[in-house]
Image (cartoon, rainbow over all chains, first blue to last red):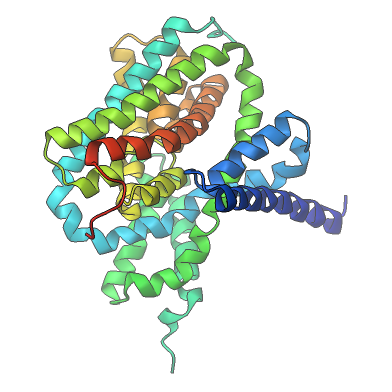
Length: 124
Length: 238
């Protein structure tokens, strides 16, 4: 496959991702359900793959790229903490206690429920 | 002369340089605190403070990068489909575990916050702490929290789960690696998933899928929990 064909394939993959994003956003816009459009887009693309309306190979080049660089996309929100320096200084103890405890509880509850109920595939 | 830092290209360039330096650093030294988002954000904040550039000026460019969070969330659906094939046979125990964990997460963080007298805006911001950052940011906007606080706390939670999650669970008698994977994905999203992948291919798959499922679940329930606990979804001006 030459470079031109490869680029076209990637372009087509991105087209599908944006198509489902647009679809999700439009449904939320018109029906006014309390779910963000991009999350609806995520559910729709899963269903489309599951129902074999689109093929995994068609969208995979774009989705792999987006997921690989996902961390880059939220750096600006990390930088946004700059504006809340005083807020964090006043509340860091509260934030640490609430987030830390809740995370430990969540970890344990999730793990114990699955360990009690799952069929054994530990050795796969 | 227009100041160079007021052009969008400034924010984009500085973010790319900081991010790829952070990635390079992470490749050299495998240490959880060297999380690329953490290091890159700290570097940029340092540059902005030293050169006296405001966040608003930086974000003229920065917003072009955060725009891609939308399509990245859609891409999670594709990841979800790939992982789903691997765990089909255990789907019901898995879904039940993620739902219990996700609901407990939203409830416990709000109740603890109330017990220690946190202001409403904190509850609005951290109700979604266990889900992947882009989805948490969306939820924070719906519940009228502060998205940057959400992002900061969510990343911190991920690093915490990544660093201490497996040891904590082993200490409490969790032997199943796949249960550990699901727990890491539910409580500590993508950064926890990175640790689950180190435990094995299958725990990694459970973890990635748990992250997607919990993202959807929390989106559906978090606004109602905020409504119930804080009293209203509309915000008083902060």
